Image (cartoon, rainbow, N blue to C red; front, side, top):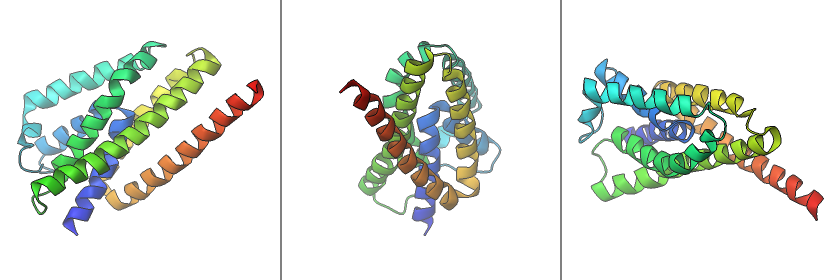
Length: 191
């Protein structure tokens, strides 16, 4: 049961990584420093104040960059693989030693990396649509929504992990359907 709960927390944190790479890691570091969360073996570095400060600086830089039109689109090329890696790491950091190391890494890559990648790819598609329709001027609204989503998911992943997991699954399904519908709509008139 503890492993399932850890995977639910991992899904929430990984989805948050899909919105912003560093926010969930910063939340984990703050929670560790405050004594609210104990990371899995090998991730004790999250409790170092210098790591927390570095994650805070990285978060500020990432958030600021997403508010610059066109830079946000360029940042997505780097953020997509980084989100998958961060999603894998955040999931790995919450899974305890009940499973074998192979099973733990496999679950972290599939659940964590997969969730972060799915969310990130949907945000990339949404930003692309926004850039195409508004010339990038509407992207600040998307950036704000992603930031709020990342913070809420990061915090609520620890508070109500099962509900967040269900919410993330519903979000991914709805977002994929919405992106597909918009792609079909944009392709149809040109035929």
